[in-house]
Image 1: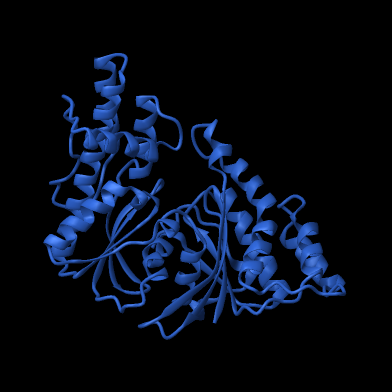
Image 2 (image 1 turned 60 degrees about the horizontal axis):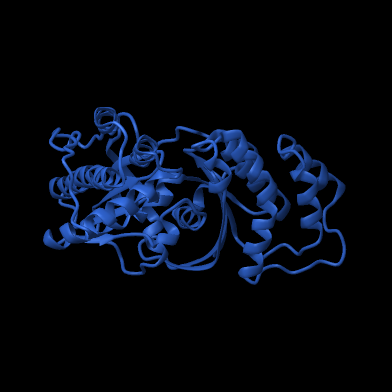
Length: 381
């Protein structure tokens, strides 16, 4: 089957088309197109993502991204005559009545193309920023209606779990533990099989990506802060610089699988206030100490979860796994502990629609009426 998936949970407008074969125990995926339009530069001046601004950009980007995705997948075929009836036009306008300007642009676009050869429309229903989510959901509703296709809502976090399947066709040994690390979430999940999840623990306050961004601001680095901290930290390692900083390893030995990163952020703030103006060496060594502390906690908790639940496989997903030091430490310790480590590619680490398409494959029998889907900002696995 061919799946067209839409992702707008935060500040990336993403549409992918994926061809899926096999069954749910041994699926195989061929990514026909993977298009992501990022808003990072737009939000940088605000120091973070502004939900209504993200929604506005999604509305502007969805049709160009759809056209590019269909073209790259070889599924865009022009149509000589309008193919939408007056009742269909009215319904699309009703579905998209809150997305200013999108209805007329979509009607024009759909009237110029043939219905593409796809079987399912999938869309992120949550978690995420609700104004941003609604833009993608209503767009997906309109497409599913116009093309008479099933609509499958997807949990964004499940997308991060299954993102490792985009380049892995080898059957996964279950149970597995999934470590999910992103700007909005930090969770450990027991994966009994695809679609069967139990949350083991989560952050009690800041997510790890959020902590990176906040600490970056304290050090005087631009948004998004995670990559900036990582660059400095790696430079410090390359030059064998350590400094006199001593940050806590929060909840590393708490006896559970929860996380807390607000305390280490506060510790950095106190350290900066005590030090005064930071020179370049201070920034390098503080970035290294912060990244070392956070990665140490993440790796320790993940390994403990695998040991306790007799899981031979560790899955790691989310934007923070683009961090090269975290990837390297996970590879090192999984090898030492004879664990199979599954990581997404850098392309499918950050928010994307390919992972949403993959997740929908395991829920293809759970399509819903387009008018019943709702954005759920705090949706849980």
